[in-house]
Length: 110
Length: 112
Image (cartoon, rainbow over the protein chains, first blue to last red):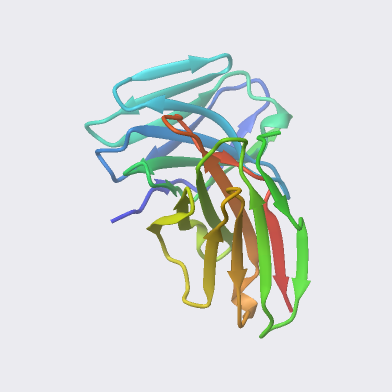
């Protein structure tokens, strides 16, 4: 199947870390991605990881990949109100298309 | 700015009508993808074109069709529109050996 699963909501206090989780399906995915979508806006690529890596850090963002469990996570350090958005993970299915998760709505409160 | 452009930004039409959405990929990108984002179905892949040829097909309805022209721009045609076709339609492009697809800003279609 092509289901990529994410929890629907996450609420964190400003300054704390946020961890958004994703479970994907295709073990042959070459790349796994995290996109951010703000209200009424398009999809912004945040970061991505090559499937032979375990971890990738990019400023406040850390991506962890567990291939055995097909689990991907995105950690946002020092979360700010501007980080409030919907976050989508996506897997590269046979390099022909992206399969997106259901999206996690992150709410940051002061 | 991803370099992918989509027109129009917003489109409001009535049931039963036909519309055309347009996408211009990043310069030199041969692959164009179409995605639909709706409240019911989430973000789903519709169709991919590579250098003018259909390459992959997703959950695209028979009422929908697409094509990619020699200048590499693409059009998504939606016909016999239904209320449920109201959605945000994204186009993305990808270059040869590129790591990722680049998304356009989307076209918001409202069917009344």
